[in-house]
Length: 155
Image 1 (cartoon, rainbow, N blue to C red):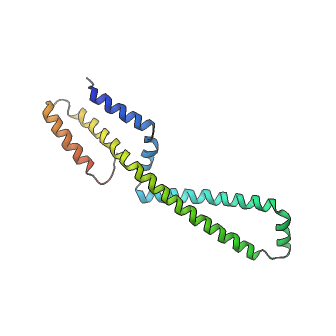
Image 2: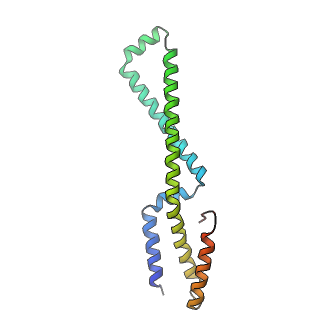
Image 3: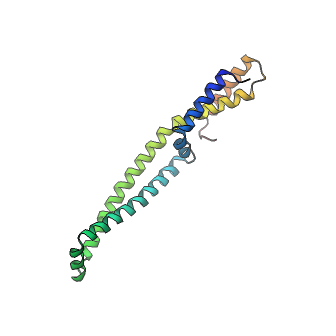
């Protein structure tokens, strides 16, 4: 028979999994450094493409000026200026991406720990269902404490 406490736990787990859990569980697959590096690389790739598109758009808008510069062979300083602008843009965006990824990871961590606690509690409730009530409660608390003291979040 399913107890009311098990139903409440399963409901909390289902609500979490359907809402913030999708993103949190995706984040939990990685160590913090891995997650930050992946997010930074993605952001840098996207920003590089965006910078290139904006540069092409600007060059199309000022096509006459670009053609005159190319005809005079005076485009070296412009290329240098564009590269400096690109480097500054990428550095700022990379730092912002790292900061944002770290915040996302740190915000998700307590929710993931709570989710794991609910799963562990539900698992041990099913595992201990044949034992007397006072022994069940003591064992459940011991096993939950043991699971929550672990350094990593494993599923």
